[in-house]
Image 1 (cartoon, rainbow, N blue to C red):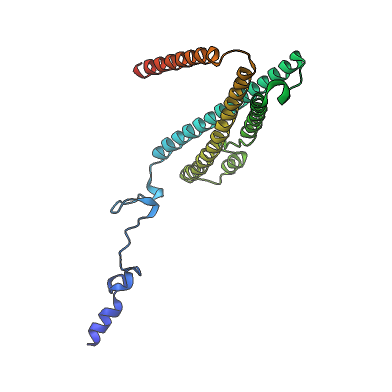
Image 2: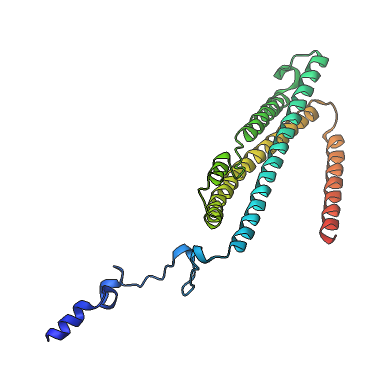
Length: 240
């Protein structure tokens, strides 16, 4: 009897019954670092340095691509801003050349509303484009502090590679969030520009004298022609 009690006390809790089970009675199958059950993790100190070098190089390439994408987004946003400014300049020039006051009595209620909406959309495009460009805060990678640490001899080769890989995780994640934010800003900029141009176009059409058919059929033909050309180019590119 005493021997059985001694054997029971000497067993770890993981072998003594329900002490190792969660409250809901299920066994945990979680593994560290998101690995699959049964998969063994190689200790960081045993990973080959050459493999760490390859992963660091690929991480640098990913970060460079993200930075390049951010630059492309900002460039498109500023081009859209310049286009919106150009259209606003055209509207102001047209008003000055006509010499007439822009009121509902002069051009009609709907043309006036569309003109006003078009100018507002163009202003929104300018604001959104400038905001998209101004919020860009890219992570360029290794900073002067990292270089000082290496010069001071604060890391071994393996420690430095492991540290850099952890840093690249943070840099690429930060760039991913920045690019997502800038893409939303770019889409807002483009949408506002297109909406503004369409409003001004419809306003101009409504102010012209003539039958609606005289404007509808040429516009429909031009739209179908542009869509047809775009479709042909898209199919040719897919096949090529």
